[in-house]
Image 1 (tube, rainbow, N blue to C red):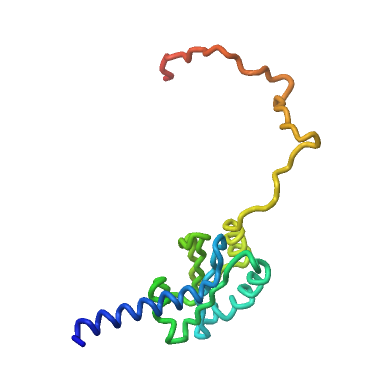
Image 2 (cartoon, rainbow, N blue to C red):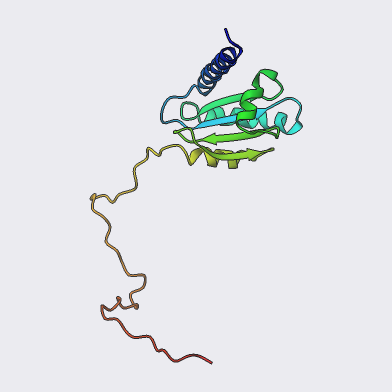
Amino acid sequence: MSTRFKGLFSMLLAGVLLASFLSALAGCGPGKPTFMSFMGKSSKSAEEMKPIVGKLKKKFKGKVAFVDVDMDDKENKGIIAEYHVSMNPTFILKNAQGQIKETFMGAAQEEMLSMALEGFIPSTSKPPSSATGAMPQSMPVSPSVPPPSSSVQPVPSTPTP
């Protein structure tokens, strides 16, 4: 084999392995957002975030795919570089189409992460409706306020001093 062919084959093989690794990491079906956590033991903030991420996993089980990337594991250098992660911890939120929509660097509040995730989960609740099913009639704000007139009135064009 030529050197050029070996190089091309190695690059192709690396691409295939990376793609299969990423798809195995994602583990999410269509229609699910993905929460990626990049954390390592070398950061106090990352250690403090582990219980918060655990709570989020319980709260959004079945609705969000969670991917944990150990920043201390040398085998994860490729995915860390792919997502340009330099801070420990880092959290990346991707929509159901796989697009990165939110990135949180450093320790984040549980409420902030939870609200961000809720924003990407389709709502299954129905909007409130009246007992009759008809749209509610609009009512004036105050009975003393007359309804708007249909005629247009000119605005004075004199300049104010």
